[in-house]
Image (cartoon, rainbow, N blue to C red; front, side, top):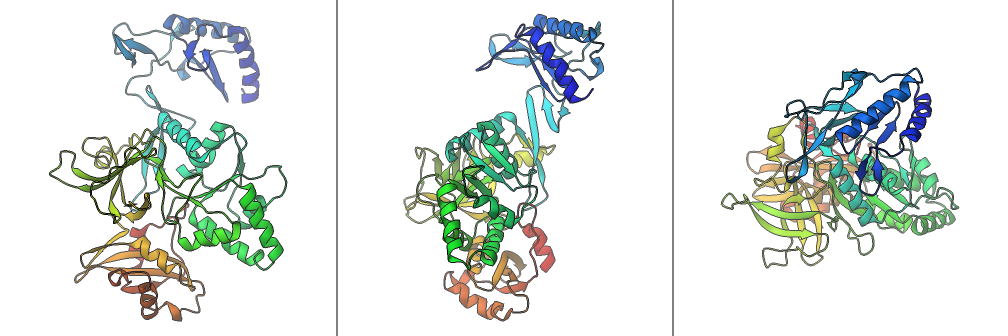
Length: 515
């Protein structure tokens, strides 16, 4: 039966059974049935009520020459566990197991340890889990099991932090296999009732058409992207619009007055792109930090000062710590900074006004449950007490500006050279200021003398003109902003830097290309 015919039949069934035998859901009243595509779910607050619903449904379908396929049915039964408020799964292993029948045939009970898959989502008796894939910038991707409760907490946090309303219209240009595109760009606006305009593939010219479209009809109010997107939009602007002062004014006015929120994430945003975007649109991009494992954790404010190169403060419901390993501590680490979104738990553990660095730890209802079928990796990525997720990112807190910034991955972006711990991202930000540099990535290569040497991989703007990209030119250029120990030891010129669909560089693969 087609989905259309199915729904015509099921609508009549729903009218007949009304709200009888239903289950009381908070905010929704009595609910006894839901249908999607060509599937139906029956719900009841009692086992007797469920059997009655089945009988009513069987009677209705039989009168219309239809029947339920018992082999494709599954029953999930929850029973109160004594005086405990929580329920327990009642499957065939319990005393006096529940029994539901159709045409005198028993419906299989969903076991406590079973999993099934429906519409691409994995279900257990305790709820649905979603094995999102962590993009794996420092290694192979891992499946992240994210519960519906975590997704809901993630959505609620973004609605509160970024002021989503039913009147918003977001232009969606991101892949849906990533948390940025799926939850930030799609589920959140849909949850609040906002409109989503989907672009099948990223096209800079098409995006500009949407962003500067005059009039109230489908006026874009929210846009989110990755640094590569903003770089390509800037290049397209320079090629098509920058030469006409009237066009420049129209674009700046339209973007600054009509679009209330433009965000950037999934990778570090170069300050050169941040400043250039402000020149073009009059808008300071909102930078934030998040991972598949934890959702959005840190964000610059919706209202207030946004400092380029920083990721603001914790999102609602998120508690963060900057920590340093300490085997003598009962929790395995020393807390340097602790903060939440309300600024009530900020606790700097030393008295200096200098920036404080350490690994970023996160506690939040948005955290993932586990890595899919990887129990060892799951245990290793949480603190010994299991309360905080270890991001693997080095985070810096500035006590004077009271903001956080990300220094890079401990495994790849922190280069240990001659006793110094050097942020590759800091060097990349400086290199991108060079007029002849289109793209760059900085990595550490093992060296017998230095421990690691600093190698800058550069994609020139003009492949035929690289005279200003030699080591003798680049080192003095970088020395204007970096200490001597952070200067590149060598330069490698490439025609492109391999990136994944979200614009991220896998530096382990990059190192293998140049060694």
